[in-house]
Image 1 (cartoon, protein in one colour):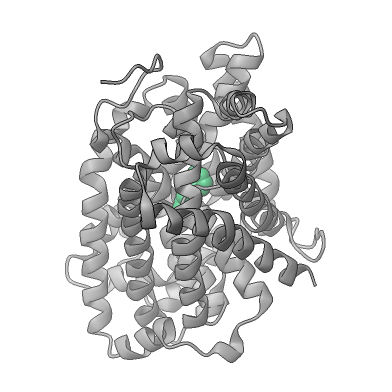
Image 2 (cartoon, protein in one colour):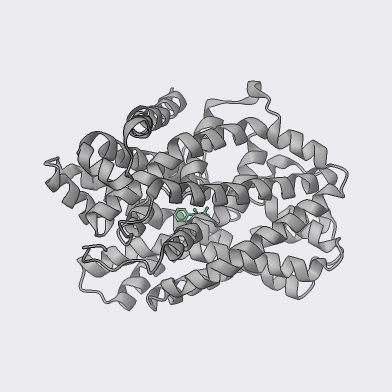
Length: 447
Ligand code: PHE
């Protein structure tokens, strides 16, 4: 039915799977839970949920809309729409900053992907069998202290990413997403079940859902917003690129709701699974980026069939990390391929090796470079902060401002198929609620 020249997703389902594959990753499990713990719990969770609904949803729709109308890579899509609507080509910066953000994020994402890979293999050898919090903690500290071991796992993870992206088989992974995501959800439910037996489940639920608003700082609000962007893969041109393959018959708002519900459910489940273990073992929720790596093995090490379940869990986590990581490398590769004489394989190698090298600097901030600080942050935290808290929200803001204020009303109603009251609500949210939300959080955090 469509008159679009560009290749398209074979079905809506495929598209939802690909978008979910990018969205669901370490962000939901590793990053979400450690941020909740670091920021004192429920207040962060609630602000995060508000950000996802009021800012994340409209921006996800806006990015898909730009992609579907532009029918090209992020930069070219933006250029095309600015021409069509007689707007300044400067809006294309939205596409460019997204590519840079994805590049920077992958460098530290791959380090954590490496941890996950390491934990998968350690589960095979039974390292965590019967271990308590102390044993697992000691294992993890040992890992962090060794730049060589960290580099090895980071390298292994990047090699996997490069192999997949270089062969251009990313589409083939969608089938795997379909089976592995539900499996991941089931395992998290098992973990939640285990949490209920620890006697600290209530405490964990209170920690996650009963807010102490007095503990909420500007910093926390900014972190919650950053997490909303990070977990939905927003502000990076990725969803924009995916949108360019989207058929006209797909309902953008409905699809966004599905992807967001899935993504959010997985993050909340991760929190509900992890905090009972934290409290039961006298660990600190503010453990930092290592949180899931010092808690989950304790649970697996002490439950019936835990060795096998732990192995499957870390395998699935690694897989979820891989499907997100390939979506992070793709923009850089696509740009190198289109803008330099490099072939697909050449572009993947050059882009991948550059990301890998930056990742080495990130992993050294856990050991030899732990005293190298910029604005009080080590290299790992700096990469994470600059991208998640600043680049992603700003790029996303650009996308929503463009769609809400610069795209013709006809284009918007054509894309969304809304009319009457529903269209008014959309316009209100897209023009005011989402952008003002982002701006207020920013300005506040800078004061
Ligand atoms: N959304 C992914 C996650 O939650 C990470 C990611 C961020 C992937 C940005 C692509 C782009 O893990």
